[in-house]
Structure formats: structure tokens, C-alpha cells
Amino acid sequence: MRELRQTLRDKETDVKIIADEWCNTLDDIEAFSEKGAVDIVHIKMPDLGGINNSVEAVLLCKEKGIGAYLGGTANGTDQSARISAQVALATRADFLLLKPGLEVDEGLMIEYNEMKRVLTLIGSRQ
Image (tube, rainbow, N blue to C red; front, side):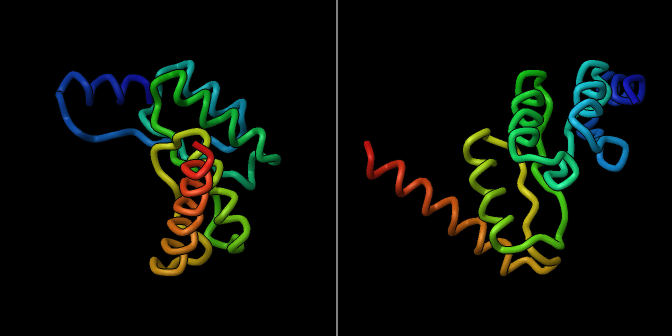
């Protein structure tokens, strides 16, 4: 994948390599980032265990200059969607999976509203 990524760069394409199903643990994310094999990592929050591991994964991606797609599963709850939104804000993840469900409206509004709520709270403290 590192060679494929380099070939794409040499050809000056806009194609990005995203690690998804082969990258499920914090160790996997570290290995992919150390090898320079990907442009973006899909960080699957449920697979990583605790929220702390998801935070570490996003921060590792940021440190290595790799895009962080904070995701997981569409089978989550509205609570997991709100927590994901908070983690994305705190770590400045590049992308956030809309959840719960596979529809757009519900997931978008849950996560958008949570982000606005958090940002409003932060703004009121300043």
C-alpha cells in the first residue's frame, strides 16, 4: 500500500488510500501510519475499546499527517453519536461517520446539534 500510495503521489492524482477493514486496532493504526501506507484511517470507535483509545488514534493520525475518519458502526445509539461528536471536536478529527442508522437526516442532526451545543458551552465560558 505504501508503494501504491507513492505511485499515486508521483502521478499527482487526487486519489487517497483509506485504511478500513485491515486497520481495526490502535496497533494497526500505528503500523499503517509508521509505514506511510495510507492517507486516511477509518477509526472504528467500538473496535478500539475505550474512548481513550479512539482519542489516541485520532491524535496519532494528526501527529503523522494522516487524515482521521472517526467512525465505527451505523448500529450505534444516539448517545454514541453524541459522544463521537464530542471526541471529534476535542481531537479535530477530519471526518465523522453519521450515526446512528444509515439514513442521513437523523445522524446529521444528532451530531450537528451536539457539536453546536458543545461549542456554545465553550463560547459562554470565554
